[in-house]
Length: 458
Image 1 (cartoon, rainbow, N blue to C red):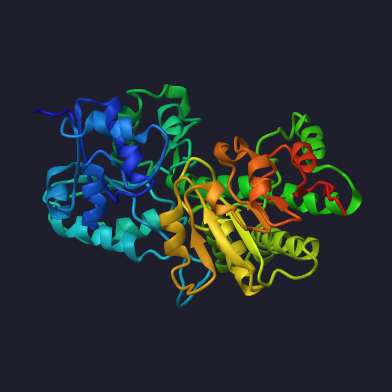
Image 2: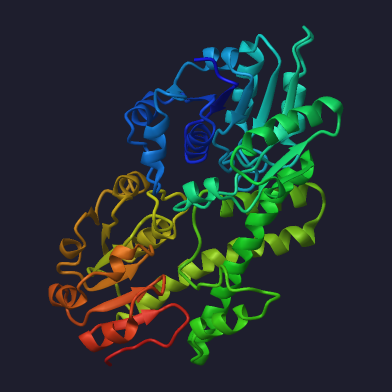
């Protein structure tokens, strides 16, 4: 089949796979190839059962497979045969050297750039699709422009603004699509090529163009603003618990202010995921490198409050359960960092589980999608953790339940049956405030929400 455009994506992860599947779905005249070094991951995509869980993803992938959506490990061929290349590789926080714990680790990004440089035999448009530090595009340009054989590379920034659990909906109906480019004639022409791809299904007023540095910084700034709101309401939740205020009522009242709005004002055990913490620390590092120490301190406080919220959650459990968790069995309801995903990266449940184990508690984990990832996250733990798919079996003989993930499944369980299966007195620590606390209290549970007065029988 003769395709109008030939698109390659390097990286078949949480961003690359879903994004390319939607582009293939919305642009049937375009060939879309996704390449990854992980053969198992590629095989999973090609089977029609993606290696990641995302509502609606399976159907979109199956629509395109073999028609105009292809997954492969042959990166050299992909680079040669495609003219538009999205780079969607992992950019974790560095664990070594300068900037360890703050800066992004760009080794996979540089490898991708050098592979493009090595295998390209015609001019390409190269698009940053992962979240990169500001001025990464400039570094990529310097690598790619080291050739002097007449082949040109135009680098664009196209940050993703996906929320896991709603990624397909976000891709099909985005708030905005952001494209950053150079203001040169070639840069603007490349930008228009990318605009034309999204214009197949996104209205033109939602496709925002900017200079390339504004585009890179906007992703970091957006995640900082969102995380800041979560940390703010979580800080208020601590005050609520000390004063008898109800954080849900406070959030509703504050959210009615049109200058503030109601979104991201749900108190919880803390935020997780691959982006918030990583992007905020990246912004901290940028500020420190540029000598903006006061700004860096302010930004970093958002992460510190998030860590404090998780520590406070376990301390509340310890205090409520007679100042000892040793020998007690605690069931974690959920391990994914949010509902409707199997992703556990930076999930609060990881730290909660480890802190409970430090207190010599026994931890039972149940989650409809994330048990495999939970095992990987706690692979170094030799004793004290079990993984049970059925929540009713998971709670059998437990002293307490800690709600970690806001899965609808946990709202719909028979808590009278659960209460009968547990050791008495039975405790529920609702780290997401998703359950009916009054009903639970009447059943016989001692209920400890976030940011609200506990409901205890003693």
